[in-house]
Length: 242
Image (cartoon, rainbow, N blue to C red; front, side, top):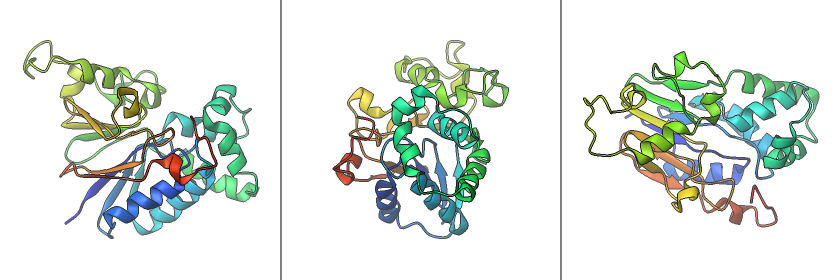
């Protein structure tokens, strides 16, 4: 039976990524959907990208681009490092590339270039890093940056009145477009929750791996999930984004 797993924001935590993948015993028929933010935080950002490139050879993988990935992509393209990026984990990413050759960096840039802004599967489930603002869906989004930055979709789902019926004119049109929506970007730790969260039909899989949380992987049919140890315990001599 083919399973689909969705993986939250990794933020340079290669040890945590290896942990969660070992817990679910990935087989050849499984599909892995990564929700973005592979870099910035722990010390192995470049090594995470190496691992994912190799993983894609053996398994069906879909890679969504996060806002931190866009920053790293710009830097790999030769643009001046964004000061905001450096402050929010970019320094550790730059350091992780210090022994990489131009050819290795180019290989990674090619990988970043082909990441998807979003993905919709055959069951009309949307996978996106942050969200979208258009009532007509992400393909009609006017500002591409919303794919990796928007938080209004998640905040709307969180605060929505559960008594509003789906056929009501007050039911948010964005939530009607897809059967389910899977996001990262906003750590569940913000709400004092350390596990994946569900609000209406939106699932948030970012459980704060960049900070004091764990990395999570969730099987989308059963909603069963697995987590790494808190990532900061795997990198005891580092600060991550704390």
